[in-house]
Length: 118
Image (cartoon, rainbow, N blue to C red; front, side):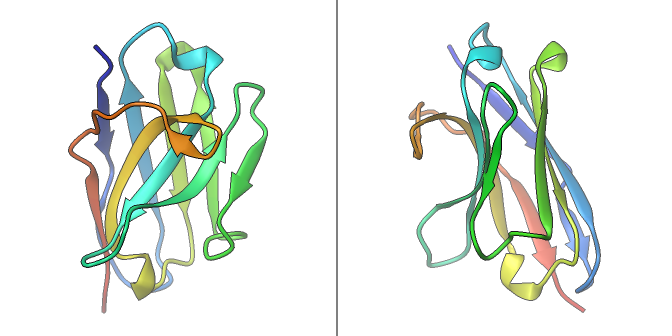
């Protein structure tokens, strides 16, 4: 059974930074692309960043130039460095393996809350 455990969220002022971590169980980690999603209140969950098995990366336009995704296969962990945070980045952030641009697994972790507010 796959499990994702997200951490690192919190309350930060606009312009601040946070680093999120997602620890994944299972032996699949190194062979699959991984993605960070977020869901704001009243909105659908959206993919904001992805990292391939070869460490190629892609980003949603809304976070490009501010967020950086990375992975450590030895630790089965994917990270999201978030800089220059804006109030519109406020959301619960989740990770999942990717099949194309879609989440691979139906079981999501509990997510980590990011709140950007002064």
